[in-house]
Length: 164
Image (cartoon, rainbow, N blue to C red; front, top):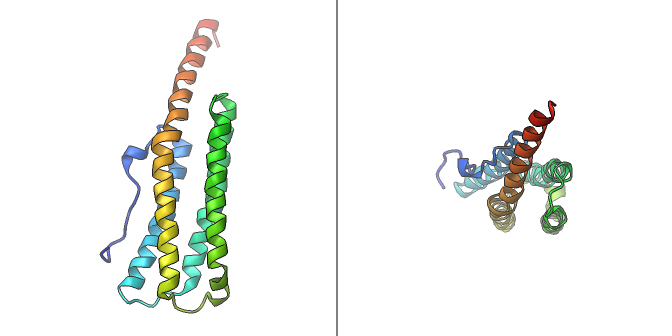
């Protein structure tokens, strides 16, 4: 990639649920930050492990926050596919945990410059994360978003009818 900043978010990922869309966008910005760091290393700039490690930790911690938001919505609207959706979240988190184990040795070297072996591992996790999130948003999240919109219409109609 060039020296330009990479933006991985696409408007087609919007679900029209503001809080969820904002969180999805933020998650993609974390991935973009990591891709931009990789690009700096590939263009022979000295980049330390520290910023990579912080961004990779953020992939995990922000996923927890986001999944809590989604799972709260699934419960609130009594989404019938809630448990299988939550299992997908758990599988994602397990994969990220596995990746954390692979980079653990680099944590003590936070002030050292990134080497090629680490860069390969980072690119691996970003590729996995982006692929997982795009597929998850476009397929699984879209299902519950459509369900919530339909349930919301019914609730609005019932409230109008009942004078609510």
